[in-house]
Image (cartoon, rainbow, N blue to C red; front, side, top):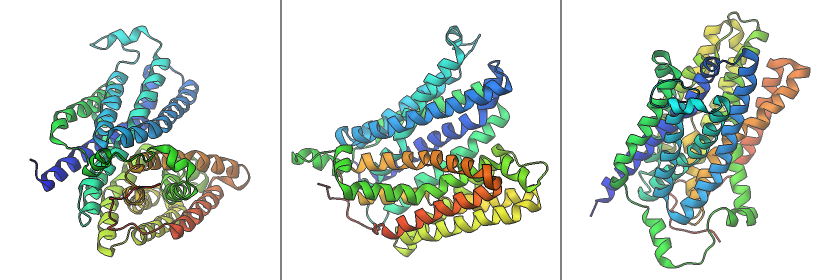
Length: 419
């Protein structure tokens, strides 16, 4: 019989490597989409429109996957979702390399309309990408002891963020097709560890108990308490995607209004942001362990994120180097992401834990949609810089109120269920 610590280490290893490939794919698409669409023969205008459409299609896939994998995790087990999601997004990633191909082993895909095929594969990849992190964190949280739970999940987050940096590095050396193949190959290679990971004991105990408790999304939807709890956690994470979706992704627009020339490139800023996030993930996780409080650690890093955003907007106009440097700081403090996901896993019962922990990160990502819509609306009257200040203030105000209402979850016994 496998020793508990060994089982825990294997679960952490697989979840961390799976999240590495997960983040690699998410960032890779944003890095290579311009090159890939240009290579497929689209004009700049067509590539812009198609790129937004592909991103939205992937986002819809993640929304669908967030619910699908979460419910499956509570009905069928954490392991089935962990490996099922990895298989799905890895295959989609690998096949993405063959979109519009005219030669090579994937040349058969060249017979289909390239843009349509690209969209279908990004939807499938989105569905797959939605499940890995939630399933991995749920499995690791339930297997780990109370004292090591935070550290174990911190490792998952830190390793995963390295995938973002790796995506930028890979794109610098190989073409977009091979970059997609690398991502697919890495994910499929993880299947070799399938038989080294064991199911959560808490889930197995729930299965054996014969309890007639509802599982999945239905208990959350019909419970005002659980629905509000999930909403608050999503609002707590919203500032993270404000920094990425506005200050980083829309840097050319914001920096141009500041008078910077040349304006920082979003791809370069993404790499800098995630370089800071690697260390921030570790620091936020360790701080929550040191303080024995998830809430205080999130509060400290949220405050740091707000200060870093203000520094980008006040020091950024000095030069592109200042904008880039403060972006690294912003990435560091925005890395309370994994502590937020850990909190989710600790606050929901075993019968709905996988659903909540899988849905929350995807809903936080989707929060970028209303945030960017608000920014766009405000920018028409206040300008890009003014819109960034106002949008950011609203995001941080909502997040602060939500955090204040959030229960403390540190060292909570996870052997409980929700009605």
